[in-house]
Image 1 (cartoon, rainbow, N blue to C red):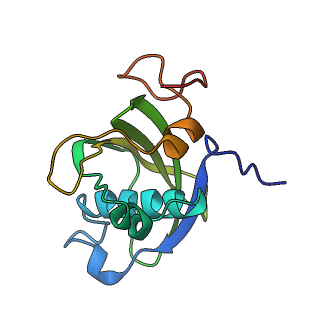
Image 2 (cartoon, rainbow, N blue to C red; image 1 turned 180 degrees about the horizontal axis):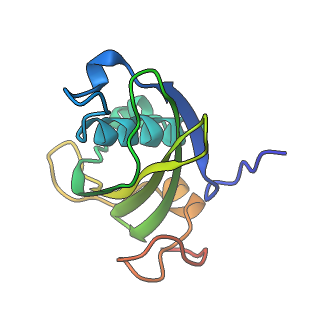
Length: 152
Protein backbone atom coordinates (compact mmCIF):
# COMPACT_ATOMS: atom_id res chain seq x y z
CA UNK A 1 0.00 0.00 0.00
CA UNK A 2 1.31 3.47 -0.88
CA UNK A 3 1.53 6.13 1.82
CA UNK A 4 -0.42 9.13 0.57
CA UNK A 5 0.11 11.38 3.60
CA UNK A 6 1.59 14.78 2.70
CA UNK A 7 4.85 14.11 4.55
CA UNK A 8 5.43 10.85 2.68
CA UNK A 9 7.98 10.71 -0.09
CA UNK A 10 6.56 11.01 -3.58
CA UNK A 11 8.34 9.09 -6.29
CA UNK A 12 8.58 9.65 -10.00
CA UNK A 13 10.78 8.13 -12.67
CA UNK A 14 12.54 9.40 -15.73
CA UNK A 15 15.08 8.11 -18.22
CA UNK A 16 18.44 9.83 -18.73
CA UNK A 17 18.42 11.25 -22.25
CA UNK A 18 21.52 11.61 -24.39
CA UNK A 19 21.11 15.40 -24.09
CA UNK A 20 21.37 15.00 -20.28
CA UNK A 21 24.90 13.61 -20.46
CA UNK A 22 28.31 15.22 -20.70
CA UNK A 23 31.34 14.23 -22.77
CA UNK A 24 32.21 11.55 -20.21
CA UNK A 25 28.85 9.87 -20.86
CA UNK A 26 27.42 10.58 -17.42
CA UNK A 27 24.51 12.80 -16.43
CA UNK A 28 25.71 16.39 -16.37
CA UNK A 29 25.76 17.64 -12.78
CA UNK A 30 23.34 20.55 -13.30
CA UNK A 31 20.65 18.18 -14.63
CA UNK A 32 20.17 16.80 -11.14
CA UNK A 33 18.72 20.20 -10.17
CA UNK A 34 16.32 19.89 -13.12
CA UNK A 35 15.37 16.42 -11.88
CA UNK A 36 14.82 17.88 -8.40
CA UNK A 37 12.36 20.29 -10.03
CA UNK A 38 10.55 17.36 -11.66
CA UNK A 39 10.27 15.67 -8.26
CA UNK A 40 9.11 18.88 -6.58
CA UNK A 41 6.50 19.60 -9.24
CA UNK A 42 5.10 16.08 -8.96
CA UNK A 43 5.11 16.28 -5.15
CA UNK A 44 3.07 19.49 -5.29
CA UNK A 45 0.67 18.07 -7.89
CA UNK A 46 0.19 14.86 -5.88
CA UNK A 47 -0.65 16.81 -2.74
CA UNK A 48 -3.24 18.95 -4.52
CA UNK A 49 -1.39 22.22 -5.04
CA UNK A 50 0.10 22.32 -8.53
CA UNK A 51 2.37 25.12 -9.70
CA UNK A 52 -0.47 26.30 -11.94
CA UNK A 53 -2.84 26.60 -8.95
CA UNK A 54 -0.14 28.22 -6.86
CA UNK A 55 0.46 30.89 -9.49
CA UNK A 56 -3.30 31.43 -9.89
CA UNK A 57 -3.42 32.09 -6.13
CA UNK A 58 -0.66 34.69 -6.56
CA UNK A 59 2.12 32.68 -4.89
CA UNK A 60 5.57 31.94 -6.32
CA UNK A 61 8.16 29.60 -4.78
CA UNK A 62 11.60 30.67 -6.01
CA UNK A 63 14.60 28.58 -4.98
CA UNK A 64 16.65 30.43 -2.36
CA UNK A 65 19.03 27.57 -1.55
CA UNK A 66 20.11 24.43 -3.43
CA UNK A 67 22.45 21.62 -2.44
CA UNK A 68 23.34 18.37 -4.19
CA UNK A 69 25.76 15.59 -3.24
CA UNK A 70 26.77 13.32 -6.08
CA UNK A 71 27.35 9.68 -5.15
CA UNK A 72 27.34 7.41 -8.20
CA UNK A 73 26.81 8.52 -11.78
CA UNK A 74 23.68 8.02 -13.81
CA UNK A 75 24.42 7.34 -17.48
CA UNK A 76 22.61 7.62 -20.79
CA UNK A 77 19.43 5.49 -20.88
CA UNK A 78 19.51 4.72 -17.14
CA UNK A 79 16.11 4.98 -15.51
CA UNK A 80 16.24 6.99 -12.29
CA UNK A 81 13.70 7.43 -9.54
CA UNK A 82 13.39 10.75 -7.75
CA UNK A 83 12.04 10.48 -4.20
CA UNK A 84 10.86 13.84 -2.87
CA UNK A 85 9.56 14.91 0.52
CA UNK A 86 8.84 18.33 1.98
CA UNK A 87 8.92 20.06 5.35
CA UNK A 88 7.73 23.46 6.48
CA UNK A 89 10.72 25.47 7.71
CA UNK A 90 8.77 28.66 8.53
CA UNK A 91 5.32 29.89 7.47
CA UNK A 92 6.97 31.33 4.34
CA UNK A 93 9.61 28.67 3.58
CA UNK A 94 9.45 25.08 2.37
CA UNK A 95 12.35 22.65 2.17
CA UNK A 96 12.25 19.78 -0.32
CA UNK A 97 14.60 16.81 0.10
CA UNK A 98 15.48 14.56 -2.82
CA UNK A 99 17.11 11.22 -3.49
CA UNK A 100 17.89 10.17 -7.06
CA UNK A 101 18.35 6.41 -7.37
CA UNK A 102 19.22 4.27 -10.38
CA UNK A 103 16.30 1.85 -10.67
CA UNK A 104 18.29 -0.99 -12.28
CA UNK A 105 20.52 -1.52 -9.24
CA UNK A 106 18.99 0.64 -6.49
CA UNK A 107 22.20 2.67 -6.13
CA UNK A 108 21.88 6.23 -4.84
CA UNK A 109 23.10 8.55 -7.57
CA UNK A 110 22.58 11.86 -5.75
CA UNK A 111 20.88 13.41 -2.74
CA UNK A 112 20.11 17.00 -2.00
CA UNK A 113 17.63 19.65 -1.03
CA UNK A 114 16.19 22.97 -2.07
CA UNK A 115 14.67 25.69 0.09
CA UNK A 116 11.94 27.94 -1.32
CA UNK A 117 10.48 31.24 -0.13
CA UNK A 118 6.84 32.04 -0.78
CA UNK A 119 6.44 35.37 -2.59
CA UNK A 120 3.32 37.24 -3.58
CA UNK A 121 2.68 38.70 -7.05
CA UNK A 122 4.66 41.83 -6.09
CA UNK A 123 7.69 39.72 -5.14
CA UNK A 124 7.25 40.27 -1.40
CA UNK A 125 7.47 37.42 1.14
CA UNK A 126 4.06 36.01 2.02
CA UNK A 127 2.72 33.20 4.16
CA UNK A 128 1.92 29.98 2.42
CA UNK A 129 -1.83 29.33 2.30
CA UNK A 130 -3.07 27.70 5.54
CA UNK A 131 -4.11 24.51 3.73
CA UNK A 132 -0.52 24.09 2.51
CA UNK A 133 1.12 24.92 5.86
CA UNK A 134 -1.22 22.52 7.67
CA UNK A 135 -0.40 19.56 5.45
CA UNK A 136 3.39 19.79 5.91
CA UNK A 137 5.43 18.37 8.76
CA UNK A 138 7.26 21.15 10.59
CA UNK A 139 11.06 21.06 10.70
CA UNK A 140 12.45 20.95 14.24
CA UNK A 141 15.64 22.59 12.99
CA UNK A 142 15.66 24.68 9.80
CA UNK A 143 18.96 23.05 8.86
CA UNK A 144 17.62 19.51 8.91
CA UNK A 145 14.81 17.73 7.10
CA UNK A 146 11.85 16.14 8.82
CA UNK A 147 10.50 17.01 12.20
CA UNK A 148 7.30 16.84 14.13
CA UNK A 149 3.92 17.69 12.73
CA UNK A 150 2.40 20.88 14.00
CA UNK A 151 0.91 24.23 13.16
CA UNK A 152 3.16 27.02 11.96
